Image 1 (tube, rainbow, N blue to C red):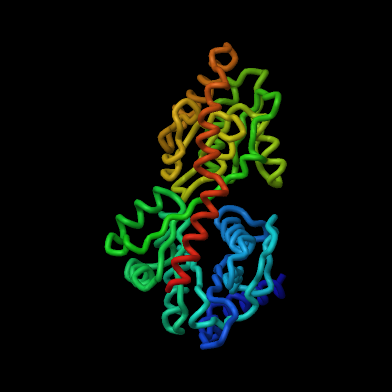
Image 2 (tube, rainbow, N blue to C red):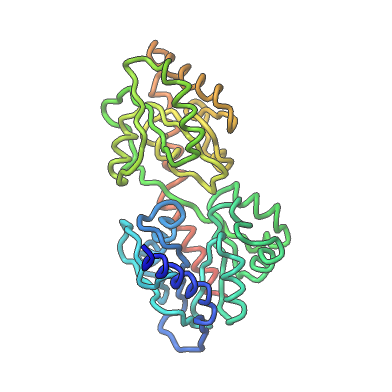
Length: 348
């Protein structure tokens, strides 16, 4: 135990002193552009980490002449997430090419990493996946300076874009909108739906437990609640495909994908929008509850169960919504956004 603690302390110290390891050199390169994505260490790629790995994979798979992308884990350059993507590449040192390499820094580490990049003469952009994480572990002044000197600022939702324009209206000209995609061939309704309510316990655990307790004594015997946890993506998709109702406990999300996946799988979605969810909160399928209103949340769930049990709800009515979501969050749009990003950076 003492050895592990000592090892962790040493590892954290080395990470904090990493600014002395960064170097920027003028070196010839066969590439006109190399995007290096800063990435936290996470055993399993999910959320923002999954997006980083996916973007690296997609850029490399596009096979654009003289353009490559790679993942960079500065806490441990040999670290690798468990991610279902091919054609990945990894940076295994702290040496950057001054002319051809662009450091892609996520918003949660933007202030500290951007300061290092500026001091070393490293090109950088900021990729924002959470509009409400911009000031995480940083003060307003250092965050402003980081965004001021970024070549571009990317975002992945309407809500994040609005947050950025509100905070930095003078930088609106360099905010670039990317799009995320959802695997609509994986997330789709099962042939036979079951009376299952699904939710993710890791999201606002206190809220989800309260809702479970509020409806426990009123849930019809023919219905069951199935938490989605410790499942791989295939198992999640199969579970959502069978369920009829998904409970959203999103809180200040950049763009919460689970409610979209649930909707594509033919679920009614009840709960919180997480703010960013407002861009996909389609009438008839999505039912918003004010964050923290546990009683209304519970009443809404029981009301929709009663509606379904009485045969007054027609699932065919949400087919149009599914088509709309498939188009809005399609791989074609995601690839077009990344290609446009590469084009802009290549000109710089």
